[in-house]
Image 1 (cartoon, rainbow, N blue to C red):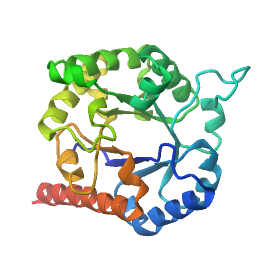
Image 2 (cartoon, helix red, strand yellow):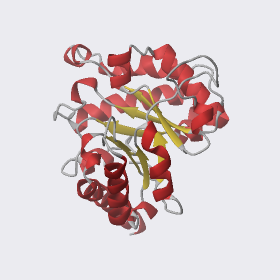
Image 3 (cartoon, helix red, strand yellow):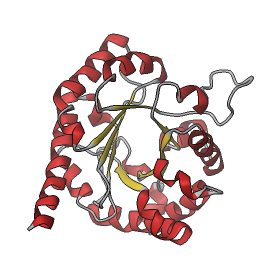
Image 4 (cartoon, rainbow, N blue to C red):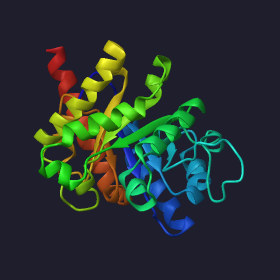
Amino acid sequence: MSHQRPLLAANWKLNPVTAEAAAELARGVLGRGERLSTEVDVVLCPPYCWLLGVAEILHDSHVELGAQNCYWERSGAYTGEVSAAMLAGWCQWVIVGHSERRSHFGETDEMVARKLAAALESDLNVIACVGEQADDFDSGRSADTVARQTDVLLGEMELHRLRQLVIAYEPVWAIGSGRSAEPEHAYSTMRAIRQRLRERFDQAATEVRLLYGGSVKAANVAAYVELPNCDGCLIGGASLDALEFSRMLAAVAEVYAGAAGRAAE
């Protein structure tokens, strides 16, 4: 944790299948978590087709809306794509570079960097994902891998865009596996990301929030947000259960409330 407000982002992936189920989930999160969303920044990222319906439910709440992907071109002959400029009309956030986009659709670091640049230019807040494969983890190259990915993402980024950027560390071997990274490993790897940011932007690097993602649930979320370089979590499967998600919100709020209380003593 840091001086930044904590952030929990819910990546619904290719779920739910119906508009009714998406609306029910959004209402469930809002009903159980709206009070806590004044203490924790909350972002829901449904599939494209449910964005408008969920936006209507979240209207006038503290919970914000995000998309799971975008394209770097503003418009043109790109069948099936949705541009960052299009999303900016109803979303506040977008995820780029998720490991499933990289593995299933062949997205490279360079492609993700182009999406990031387009999203920032469209004034979206961006959760940019980095993370190592199992072989990098097994050979002790986790920190080097995410540092390299971070270098590519930052590209020619301008200082005034830093406040729009969130970087999510998601070890690929932990995504959807039920196997989460040990907090010590998450800490050391996220420290490498923070170091890269400092080398590039000096003290302004503290404006960038860092998230952990990878089999996060209510039982372990506090262990991650207590880490010095972690400002929240990017949550996948567990975010599809409104009760479980609200428990995660409560756990994060409790960690930050405890830290504030100790600081005041």
